[in-house]
Length: 218
Image 1 (cartoon, rainbow, N blue to C red):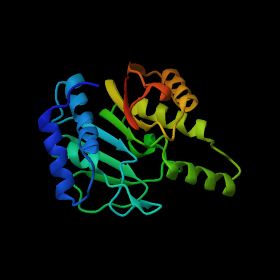
Image 2: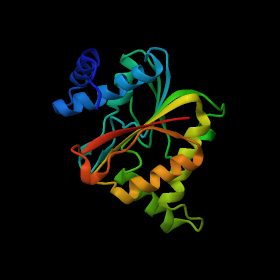
Image 3: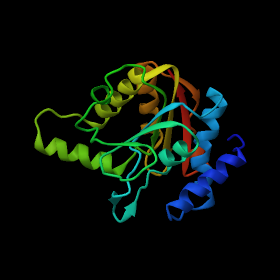
């Protein structure tokens, strides 16, 4: 894992302090790592159009745990033009927050113009328990079923369409949720829809981290 820009780490602390939300030093490093990588691959963050898929929301919670949109806030503070999407509402954010349930809505319907973004981020979206819960609910209430594989493939394909040429797709995942077989399947989907893997996802058995970052290019 590359060295994190100290300026980015301090900015991450500021964002979380401003929103009175406690996180560990590991989390400060984690959220600032995305900004450091965007700078590393694209030369800078300021002015970049970034889509944060499943960004979190101030009014959302799962089993009592709040998932705030800190990545979107952080990137907006860094000067990026950020659009965050989540199924739950978030008010008075420093970025454009859209409320949309992607199990029912297509990214390509939300963003009609292809090649709209320089960067897309998916932080714990593909291994989100909320995603699995919504898919199970849809299976119970409609005949046309989209299983987990079909959903992941659709989202990856739509991300590929709305990214500009050489755009980056950052995926953060948790070892404890998505095992080796799940990561292998996701790798296959990303390859099939046209992404180029820049940095591989570590195997669970070799990983020292509970969360990690994978980077793909269109």
